[in-house]
Image (tube, rainbow, N blue to C red; front, side, top):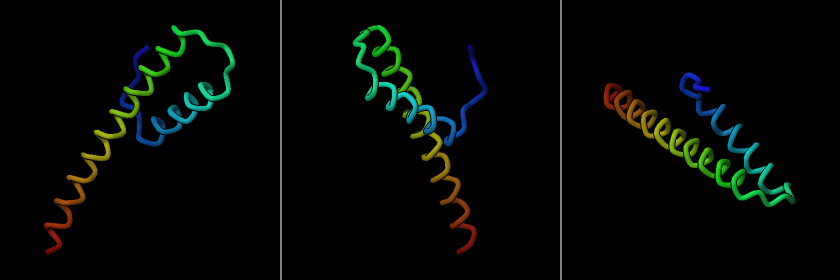
Length: 66
């Protein structure tokens, strides 16, 4: 299942769900844990990229205001 680029808010919400599931699940299924950790890493990288892009955009805006 591929989805269009997740928004920052969607990615954070999914990260929160993953964290909740990992913290509140007593089953230790290493395959499931590994998949959730991989997905969380992907989501964190997506958030990091979006924040970097926003920072660059804001810097350009601020330069034009000077």
